Image 1 (cartoon, one colour):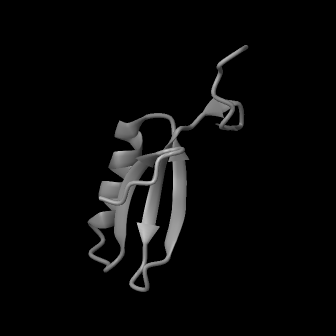
Image 2 (cartoon, rainbow, N blue to C red):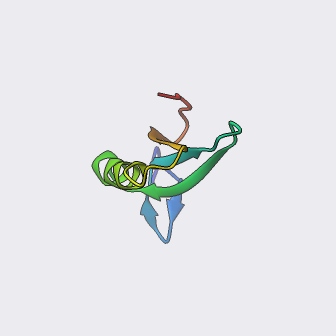
Length: 66
């Protein structure tokens, strides 16, 4: 199918990432999700744990720190 997003995981398109940044500035992908809302719920839940790490959501192909 032309123009289809090929970023897949188990056949599902998962364009939203949850990113974690640790105290040293290292960034890690926590997970990939189908919707921004789903990814944001995960990031918010992780953020509530009170750790010093930062969590945010970004779309695949975009790298914008909050």
